[in-house]
Image (cartoon, rainbow, N blue to C red; front, side, top):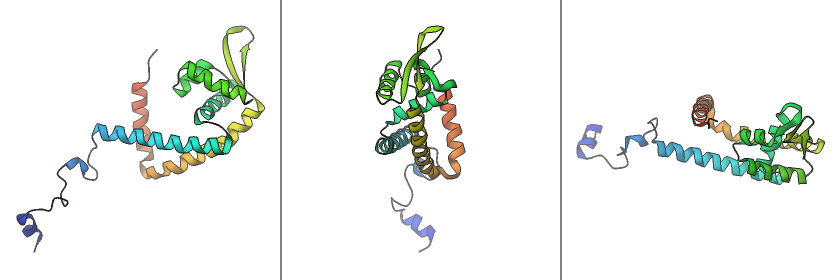
Length: 170
């Protein structure tokens, strides 16, 4: 029986998808794209958070706050700067920084000449912890993202455009 005979006799339901969007290379529906973004974010976040807790006694949020403070000029940042960098509320960052202060990784201080703004400054212990945790974080994230293969640049560019378009304007 040739391929024409199979088509004439009726195509099995699993041979040709009824929905063209399920074909490889077809454009996904927005709901499918959104689901994948949420799943990937949730799963990577969980894996990295677990590794940071296990190996460095840090939450992912705590690590990200430490990293932003470490990268700031003079290893010092305001709560607002950290909140903006992490996409968190000031209350959330204040709570996170409070835990980092309790661990001796950060100190809160006011700069001379500007008593209004409270800054978080990295301690020596904080610098050592963020450096050690950065290796764990970066290696795990890089490993997981290798699954993007040659699509990494395209995905990164596309997500950057969406992020820029959705940034809150003040």
